[in-house]
Figure: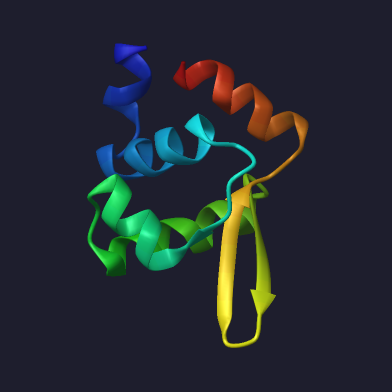
Amino acid sequence: MVVFEELIEPKIVKILRLLTANPGRHYHLQKIASDAKVPIASTFRIVRKLAKLGYIDSVVIGKFKIYKLAENKKAKELGVLLK
C-alpha cells in the first residue's frame, strides 16, 4: 500500500479514498474538495481526469455536475487496492 501511495500524487489518493469509502454516494465538486482537503482547482483537474479514464461517473443536474465512483471492474479493483 505504501508503494501505491508513493507512486501516485497524494491529492489523487485523497480523492480516491473518499470516493471508494462511499461508492454509492454522489458528491458535488465542492464537497469532494472539502472532504478530501484538496484545493478546488486541483480537485476539478483530478475529477475530470478520473472521469475521462472511467473511474468515476458524472451526472448533470441543472447547472450542477454530481460525481460518484463508477460501477465497473476498474473502479472496484481500485477500491480493493485502497483498502
